[in-house]
Structure formats: C-alpha cells, structure tokens
Length: 293
Image 1: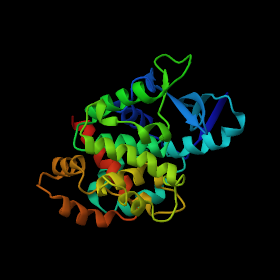
Image 2: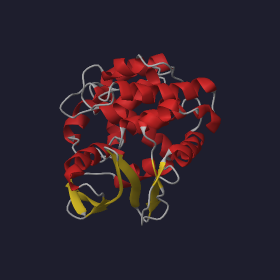
Image 3: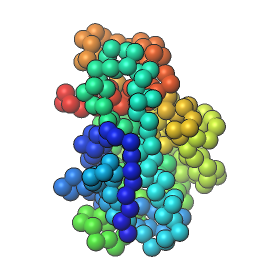
C-alpha cells in the first residue's frame, strides 16, 4: 500500500534523515538511497514501512502491514514521527526574537523535531543512552532487539526484527546485554509501568513529564527528551516546550555558536526566551552541532 502524507513546506528531509540515520538500530531500521525503512508493531501485529520525499510537498509511504483497519493509527503515528503537522511560521515567530535563533532558522527553515514510532521504544532507547555516547547506545539497542525482539520476514534488506514487547522487557534481565544492573532494572521498570498504565506515553495527556519522573531511574533529562519526541501534540503546547537543559550537546552547541562558556543553569535561563517552543530551539541547536562535527 502506498500513501502520501502532505505537509506545509518547507521540510528539511536531509536533517530528518540524518537524525534517524545516526540512530538507526541494526535489524530494525535501514536507510538506503535517501529512503528510511523500519519494522513496526501495533496491537500485536507486525509489518514495515518505507518513507521518502516526493514532489508536491509530501512524503510517500510504502506500507506493508496485514491489518488494514490499523492504517489510520499508523498514519497518525507517522505524521507525529515526522512532525508533519508543525506550523513552522507560528513556531518560528517567537523564536526569531532571539538573534541566534533567527540565524539558525534562516539556515534550516524547514527543520522539524523528529518524533518516535512508539513511546516504549523511545523511552528504552533514551534510558540506554544515559551517560554514554549515541553510538554506544545504538549498539546496545541493537543487541536488545536481536535478543528480545520478534523475528520478522520482510522483503526490505536489513529489516529482520521488531522491537520487543513490554511484557518481554518487563521480566528480562537486561543487564546481561552489558550495562549496569541499575539501568537494566530501570528499563524493565519502564516496560512494567506501561503494562500497568497503557496510556503512559499517550501524546497530549495531562502531566506527562511528571508521570515519567515518578519512574525509578528516570531523571529530568530523560523525561524531557521523551516528552519532546513523543508526548507533544500541536494543539497543546506543553511538550512542544520540553527542554532538556542539562543536555551536554545543547551546552556544547551554544558555546560553539556564541564563544562563551555556559552552565546548564545559564542555558535554562536563556531558554526562557524561547518559550513556548523550546523543543524546536533544542532541535536547532542539536542540528547546528552536528554540522560542526
């Protein structure tokens, strides 16, 4: 099945693809010739999709999923994952009052905030990334998918597994993958929390960050990161304003751009000027840093 997902231009597909490519998990995601592909699971049913830009201000999706009734939910998830409903002129207007943000927006006017296919997957990957590099976290995620994910017969090269279900991760000894035992317990605890509250990662639900902070091993950075990429809804500004102020990458980006040392507290104070769209300010900063590497 082929679908067209329209958006209001501009759209910075190279930046979106670069973000996803740097975090692609072996066996679950692949990028070939500018096309992003991955396995997906929904309500116990598994399949795949591939997505790429086409003419006419749209992304083309090739969907292989056996349950046709799930298509509306899949489309909603894809629109959120690829931030297709962002009203960039409205978002940019308050950000441009800061000269730095105005410059970054001029450089990448179509930059979006990458979302996530699934809240559990995002949360697990965020916890795996605590205090280690992105590449190390991706390797751990690949081991997790290979050991606990479900095999998938797919015609897409490199797509062989689906991300593990919450019920599997809740009882698994994940420390055996090569991480501290406390982190393994946090991962299993997140999965159990989703089993206890199936709406834990529901976008737009009241008090999303507070619910995440109540979980053992989830600090402010992790909660804000999950909120930014999963919990936001364009009709509700709370999580569009999520901002992990202690993020090392954000601090490095601001230092590189302005040439002065800055602390997490100073970054947080500076970011008050970027409300209510601090999440988009964070993505602009992260992307500027990736261009310097």
